[in-house]
Image (cartoon, each protein chain N blue to C red):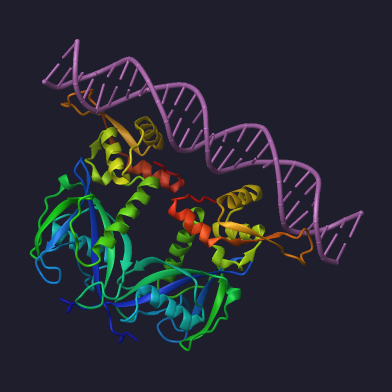
Length: 226
Length: 226
DNA sequence: GCAAAAGTGTTGTGTATACACCCATGT
DNA sequence: ACATGGGTGTATACACAACACTTTTGC
């Protein structure tokens, strides 16, 4: 039964980061053929003793230095000629990280690893353009009805910072008062009582994500809407 | 590079059908070990010269006789011990069909193939219980904001029939007047002018899905809500 | 004429959106 | 004192949910 020819199976990761200015995406410059010296998503072969998600985390750790992030399966890409080396399936994941929390460490198999503004991506190898497009669409959809995105900020953040992040993801302006109202009503964020000082204006309140409350609300089947 | 050990890759299909009474699901009784004589989702190994979706269609055609249905990738299951024969990944798809349009033909590798009421499923082999749960959740989510489900009815249907189908999928009652209003306002269905005769009551109007209009509306970015 | 299901509108309630000014802080 | 961005409330439109009776057909 298991004597069927087997495709190779890889994992590719679309890692979104946010530096406070724009949404960006982590790409890796390949040192080896195929697509030598081109930019591609961090990825690697699935090992036999790990699940796809474990594999995605290992790949990210060893090839980019990132660990411990939010991670979700995106789609499995299986085009017959998507890899010039042969039949290779790719289980794609997407991840959200705060770049400031990690040091980028290019693995030995890469010339380098770098953040790119989501609106200024270089040409990419394999079918990774399609993978990236799918990941952006998924992130946009997800963020409007589930409170993801806190992973991209520091632990404590101001409402303006959170709003600006959402505007970067959704690529549209959001009304300040409506945004604040909905965020606070949802109870998934909590004021800390602290203020961010040192700005050249009104010192803004710092908030944090209330994960316990979020999980409790999920069980009650609550709806979140941007 | 491609000398890494490779997992086997299979395709599993969660096929939803609807007989006018209840939502049902197609299972296949295995003739071979493992899980001999148990019910499982129709599935099979991915061939090297086909994409995963092509594979899903081939598997359904050869193992159950079904063809030409709505099909969508669900999730890739990759638990390490999910198959006793070794490391086997499964790319799961889900499909919607009208059982009356097809004759069930059990492939040679099965004792039989049969529709089961979604609320009276037998014990299933592999991790297929989990796969089925994921497919039901996905179908429920999808149906509330996209007009899928017409695939489960005959070409021409009454609004009551459509409503009852939605009630089966969503497992809740829907207000008749609100349902009719929204369906008709959405423009994705169109009255045919014909009526279904022979019932022992008021002869109801027959409608059909307006696929052209649906695709046109999609481009405009319309929102559909049950 | 009786049983059975089809068909039909309105109203209240809640939710989303649009919009402008004052306030606290740093320089 | 001035520049900068933080913070706040309301009015309107729209969407959703609740609700009951009349009409058509078959028997």
